[in-house]
Structure formats: structure tokens, C-alpha cells
Length: 182
Image (cartoon, rainbow, N blue to C red; front, top):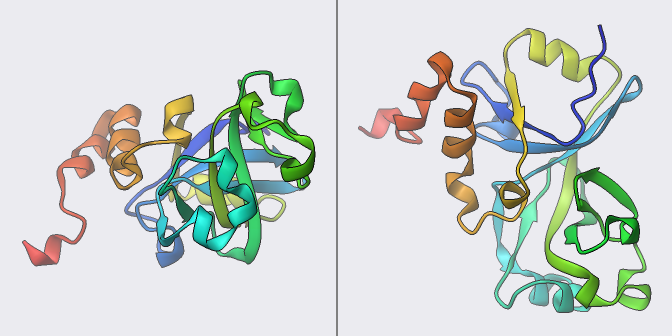
């Protein structure tokens, strides 16, 4: 039975073999019978928004890093925002969290966005692919919270999200990133 995961977090489990997604937390922005699209929330890159995409600098805090949204179209710029009024978003992921329109620099007053995060690329799944990965227990899904999308310490988000899931997987939150270095 199909169940949309739009607006939920996918949390990578140790069973996920793809290094692109190891210990990743993905916000599912769209999910339907034709596939799914999301953004990895916990992969800041070593470049600031003002350096990489100066035109979007007015929507983010000074020093805000661009984040790797996923391996698909890494040159694509996606901007996730927490809107004062969700009707101003190009598309809503959940609650007041949605995407800035592509012409935001010309048409959107920065005061209508509480906070924003800029991503390079995105994660994508074809029809049935995400469902198969969930069945293989490569991912678990948990409710998303607005603060997850704009975490001040995104590198801790995987541990937070896996604990939120609970159960046997929560013990992995205590493990170092690379247990072989222990």
C-alpha cells in the first residue's frame, strides 16, 4: 500500500550501502507514485552562500554554508525556507517549510522568509525505488520538525533523528562516525 512520506525525514540506517547517503538525513520534499525527491539536511559544504550564490545572500544568515542536497544535478540550486506565510512558497514540503521560487531575488521580500538554507543538488528516487529501499531497511522515516531543516549543528542531526526513531537503531547514535578509529 502506497503511503506518501512527503514532509517526513528519511534517516539512513547502517544497512544502507550507498556512501552518498551514509549517516544522512533527508527531508522528503515530494513523494508520489512517480518517485520521490528530497534534500540531505546534514551535509554542509565548505563554501558560504554569499561566496557561491551571492544573489541569495539576503535570505540567509551571514556565514551560512551551502549544503549538499544530494547527488542528483549537483549544479542545481535549491532553496528551502521557513515562510511566514506558506502561500508565498513555490511548493510546500510540510507546515510552513517550502521552496523559494526560482525568481525569489526579484519577487520575494526577504521578510517573508523566517530562515532559509541553500542546497546544491538533490536526492531523487524513481517509481518504487524508495519503497524498495524502505523494505530493505536502508532507511527509517520519522516525523520532521521545522528546526531539523535549519539545524545550527547539522552534523549532529543524524544522531538526533535516529534517537527520535527509537528502538534498536537508537544505540547507533552512541557509536562514533567511524568505529574503526576507536
